[in-house]
Length: 99
View (cartoon, rainbow, N blue to C red):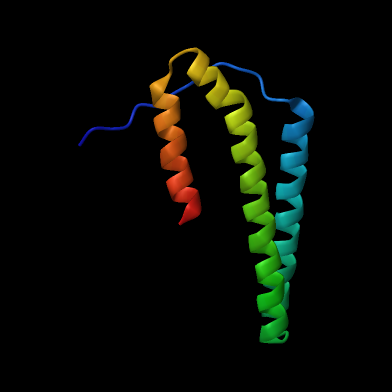
């Protein structure tokens, strides 16, 4: 079985944008921890589901921001450098993200 070789590309992400993404992830983690506590405390299932939907939405929105950042930097760089592997990896990542 062939092991997929890790692909690297060289460019710089916008530091402020990456910090905003990390902050969103931290908030989603905190929100998920509070949902876990709700379940542990036996809170109303409907309320748990509503809060869990909010966590899913936050994660999906963060994924969308990461995708936009990736396209703006990584894929533009890949096209400029004729890096087909980066484009193939993006397509694979999008398939996984959309499942």
